[in-house]
Image 1: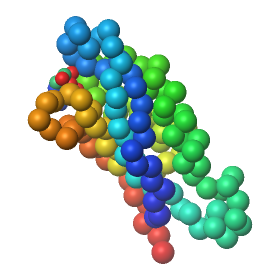
Image 2 (image 1 turned 30 degrees about the vertical axis):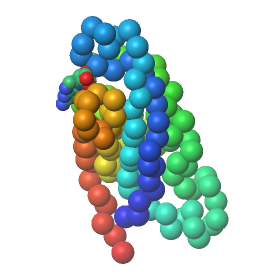
Image 3 (image 1 turned 135 degrees about the vertical axis):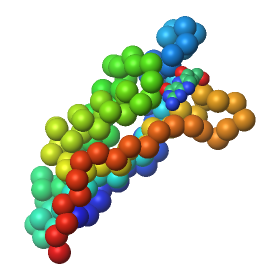
Amino acid sequence: MDIVYIRGLRVQTVIGVYDWERTIRQPLLLDLDLAWDNRPAAENDDLKLALDYAEVSQHITQMIEASQYQLIETLAEKVAHEVMQRFSVPWLRLTISKPTAVGNTDTVGVVIERGAKITDD
Ligand SMILES: Nc1nc2c(c(=O)[nH]1)N=C([C@H](O)[C@@H](O)CO)CN2
């Protein structure tokens, strides 16, 4: 199985457990590895057969901007489920980083992997 990836997708949203966090929007950074068989798109040179990273990025951005979860774990599960369902992605690895959450760090966050990688040759 091949990978289509997205790195450093920046989204601002309401996220956090503390009262002060419920009144502001904070930046999140997302990295995704999405399993996809790229051969049909390559053989036909056809975007319709590809996993369109622009469409996935736009959809995730709209979804996160409209959300108001407390934990990034919850947001990660919702994003993973939505991407797998909507785009028929069989497996993904998703990193959500919250760079402004903890002082004296570059960033903090979660990584999840969901689904199954389909092996073929
Ligand atoms: N594992 C997690 N730990 C923490 C989270 C989280 O979403 N997952 N959130 C917070 C606060 O909202 C924090 O970001 C405020 O700085 C604390 N720990």
